[in-house]
Amino acid sequence: MSVELPVLSGPRLDLPTPEVSAAVETAALLADGSRAGILALLRSGPHCVCEMAAALGQRQNNVSNHLATLREAGLVRATRQGPDSRLVYYERDEAACTAAATIIDELLR
Amino acid sequence: MSVELPVLSGPRLDLPTPEVSAAVETAALLADGSRAGILALLRSGPHCVCEMAAALGQRQNNVSNHLATLREAGLVRATRQGPDSRLVYYERDEAACTAAATIIDELLR
DNA sequence: TGACTGTCTCAACTCTGGCTGATATAACCA
DNA sequence: TGGTTATATCAGCCAGAGTTGAGACAGTCA
Image 1 (tube, rainbow over the protein chains, first blue to last red):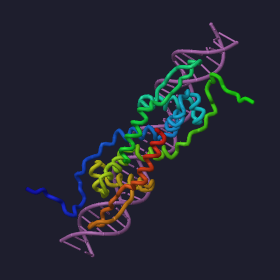
Image 2 (image 1 turned 120 degrees about the vertical axis):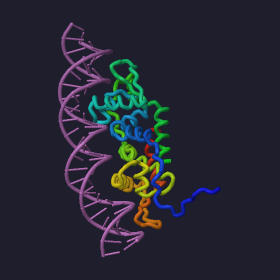
Image 3 (image 1 turned 90 degrees about the vertical axis):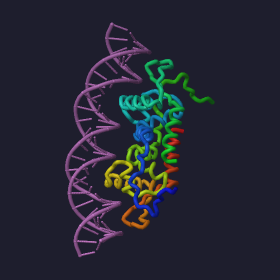
Image 4 (image 1 turned 135 degrees about the vertical axis):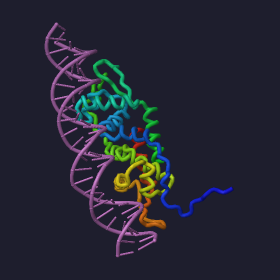
């Protein structure tokens, strides 16, 4: 028995569609300066919203909005701790961030 | 001599703005299903435009457009080789892809 | 040569996503 | 208690990115 082996085959129009949705969603989270800036800021430890808004030159509600996006994606956590409990401190979920980096890394190998 | 040490400091409103533009630009390249799919397809070797358009379920001109974006970013190369020189084969620039993965990885540590 | 194929480019349209502005809630302080 | 601060949420607006449709160009084949 033998299998048909294409010789000098032309275009293969039956390639399977690659599954990249997880990488796309992850990349979309990072493809915004505010969100990427938040993740960079949080490398040095927890920060509250107003600190990050000041560092990023963004308004508080925008930063809060981006934090909600990152929170829903699981990349950051909110904790209302410290002497002034009006301040909401955010910290990175390192496991989730590592997982996100892995997803991107697997696309780019 | 002593240095002023903040005790139970409140919000620090003087944090430096993090530099994330390279990571944001890189992530933006991957934050599209067509471009991410192209990079995934090219992991298995060079492919021509029509092959990728078929695999991605996208029109040829769109794929060509996304390839131009990836080409300008340096992630892929075009070569007009093979028996039918109408076909433009694209391949990944592995060094550039690795560099891109590193940039993302450094943001997410 | 003419018909056809594969690729590229570009103007016009669409639509997603971030920003603005306003408001609501909760905690702190006088 | 009232005033202020920190955060969250939401409708509306708008710029940017992707898609569509058309056309141009080069290479192939009869």
